[in-house]
Structure formats: C-alpha cells, structure tokens
Length: 337
Ligand SMILES: Nc1nc2c(ncn2[C@@H]2O[C@H](COP(=O)(O)OP(=O)(O)OP(=O)(O)O)[C@@H](O)[C@H]2O)c(=O)[nH]1
Ligand SMILES: [Mg+2]
Image (cartoon, rainbow, N blue to C red; front, side, top):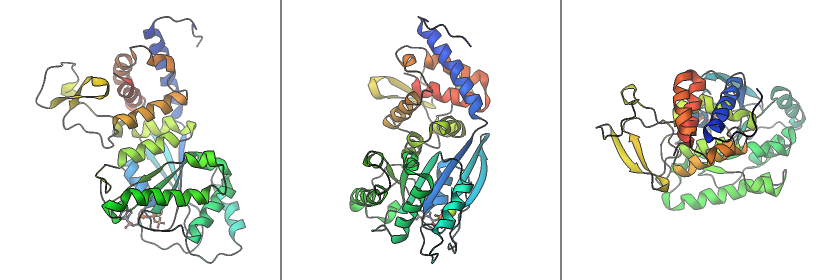
C-alpha cells in the first residue's frame, strides 16, 4: 500500500496505524512463540508458565531429573502456537561429567529460536548452587550472550520468605544470580535483566501485591520483537477488562454494575464491576507495555500525539472480531485516554 507521507489529520494517521497493526496481527498468527525455561527440578517452572498463560501448557510434576535433556511441550492458545522448552537436569546435581559437549549439541539442534527465556529459582533459597552456575554457563555457551537480552529472573515460592525479609531477599538473590550471568555477557545487558517474585499457590507476594501483572509486564517488555504480537494475541482477552454485551452502549450514566474512578492524569474512568481481567496491569505496567509496542515499531509514535486511536481502534476491534479483533481492542484500551 502506498502511503501519503504528508497526511495531516490525526484520524488519517490513526487509520493508517490501524491498518498496519491489523496486517501485522494477521501475520503474527502464523508465528510460533518459544519460551525457554531454565532452573532446578521442582522450583516451579511449569507452574509459573501455566499461571501466566492461564492454561496447563506444561505438565506439573514432582519427578527428579535423572539425565540432562531438552524437552518441549507444544500448545495452542487463542490460535497461537506455543513451544515451552524445558531443560531438565541442567541445574540439578547429576553426575554427567564430560557430557556438557553432548548437551550443547542437543540443545542447539532442538532450539532454533527463543522469544522469552526464564531463569527460575526459589526465593527462599540463599545461594546460587554449583548446578545453577553450570546451567547459566551452558545456556550462555549454547545461545551466546544475546539470549540474556530476552531473559527474566523468576523467583518462586515468594511466600516462603518472611514478609519483613521479602524485599531484601529479592534484591540479594537477584544480585547473586546477576553476578553469575555477568561472567558470560556484558554489564549493560545484565543490568537491565528484570527479576520478579511469584508464588504459584497465592495470588499475592508478601508485600501484598498481586504478582501476575508484574510477571506479565516483565515477560512482555523482554520478549523478542518477533514474539510481541503473537504473545499479545494469545493473552489479549486475559489483560483487557471485558464488557458485557449489555454494556456495549456508551451511556455514561452510573449503572449498578459500573463505578467511576479517577485514573492517572486525573481523568474519570468508567470501571466495569465484575469484569476484572484475569491479569490486572496497573497504570505503570500499562505505560511499560505501551512503550515497548512503540519501541518495537508496532504502534507509531505520531499516533500518540493525536486523538483518535481509542475511538477508532475500539469499534474496529469489535468489527473484526476473533483474535485479531481482540488485539485491536486491547490496543484501543491501552492507548485510550
Ligand atoms: N508453595 C509453592 N509451591 C509451588 C510454587 N511453584 C510450584 N510449586 C509446587 O512445586 C511443585 C513443582 O512444581 P513444577 O511447576 O512442576 O516445577 P518444575 O520446575 O516445572 O519442575 P520440573 O519440571 O520437574 O523440573 C508442584 O507441586 C507445585 O505445585 C510456588 O510458587 N509456591
Ligand atoms: Mg516442569
């Protein structure tokens, strides 16, 4: 499509952005999302992936890793194909001396792309074990330092740490793991690796905050550019508040199942009661998600300076329907003011 580069009205800019986003969403449907999980057996890798996606895409077990290997689970979420790659034994106490070479070959032949890499460890542990160190080394050797650009550190079992020690434990454990990672990549890359504390048996961490929105945001901002739209497509309905069909009309009068709250920038927002999304993101997390969409070139910056994106994308999303419509609707919700 040839675009007029001197479009003056914001609505035209928003329309162009809309059609380009729709094109991108449609092509994202054919793409696969690959998550790589690294961490000791039983730390909660599978549970955390399942908590994030809201579906049992990785099996939860209590098996002991007996050999070092690479296992992958294939799954489909909202039309998006997911591959979750597990690395059993990689961070466990297994006598496999001399087999690192073989393992590297195996992992390199099985894993062609990584969109999100998680290093998972329990928050209530105090040190980085020799096996975790070896896991960090092998992953770095297999994929090069670039792999850390899509990495997050996930600490599970957050509620097994006393409330008063929570923040300190999170900081200290993050620092210790980063000290290992920096041996294989640059300090600049390590400095921006985020860590997040979760607990798969509780919706909150000891600081009283719900962790799922934080995990979502951190995974999102670290995701490969190729993975962003497929990930949004798979999760759009989980993060956007849904309206009931009876509430589609834009009446602004107070209805029993609606209430008003003052959002950031002092705007009054209509909040749909009982329509809370599975993954709630707060205003700050929303800003980070928006920034990532702009930085990745998915949403053009110029659209932000004008009105229109919310009012245009919203009805368009409803009209398109399906997974693409859900993403367009989500973009409308994220960028509306
Ligand atoms: N209390 C608590 N239990 C957890 C947490 N995460 C996982 N579990 C439990 O720990 C056990 C192991 O969880 P998995 O998710 O299978 O762990 P994994 O790291 O995938 O284990 P492998 O795939 O066997 O290496 C299960 O019984 C989970 O229910 C957590 O954050 N808090
Ligand atoms: Mg597992």
